[in-house]
Image (cartoon, rainbow, N blue to C red; front, side, top):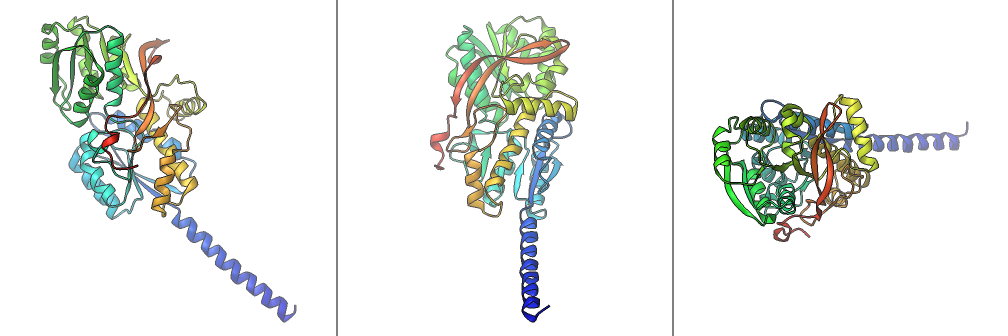
Length: 385
């Protein structure tokens, strides 16, 4: 081999080695660390488990995404401790997973101000949608008021004139009743805030009985809704019930039983939505986990799909590019149409569903659209454009 040939080979090896190192470095830099803080034990654990399982299903084929999952035990102080460790020690790029709005309010403002992107698969408190909006905060589920607004609109169409309303005394509960009253045109027979995590509703049911109400609207997520519906069914009160999907979703229905049959509830998602992304999700979730997906599972899945879509178009190290890629929301959502409003909360249809039986399984079917292309009431107060 001539000297020139040897020099050429050495040059190729040197250049090749440099390229290999660069590619390896890029590969390492492109690993995205996701910190998931969610409720996996105690009351409401089914919600967090479904969000986790939906998210992990969406990202399972991407080897460059590392997900660190921790249980917040539905306690704000635990959630804050976990977030601090994830951002400061684990150096996560993205946080997600929180179910409860009081936990979100404890964690999100500090995280986004540290330039950590937070993707909410559930909690959407009004305080983070208006003046408290932030360029690093994206809600992939809804703004808290949305499903309750649709319930208020449905109550009007059903002819209800005197509704008794109740919700837990925490940010999402206050947003719920605010949203319902924003659209409901009738009178209120009563308005109650219950304790978060409450199990016994005998006193509230007695007040409903004596109120002269012609209908009931309640927002009681997780085990709270299960407890209320079982006790309400046993009370003998025969008033129509309206609620958001949180109290009539798949896991809840299994626990409540036939007492929920016929109840109308509002949701931005349903397993019978006729689009390819949803069909794929429902099929894969059922085959992977051996159960039907819930609203929460669909939100976790869409959060994972949004993350994947942003990473296809931007590196995580390019924060501006990554945020812009998230804003575009270039993914096929399980709910069909999906785009972000300027405050980075969804614009989407909210459906009215009815609890039915398919064989021996309680589930929901869509009966109408409650609100079409609904944004949220706080978007104009947000400085993001």
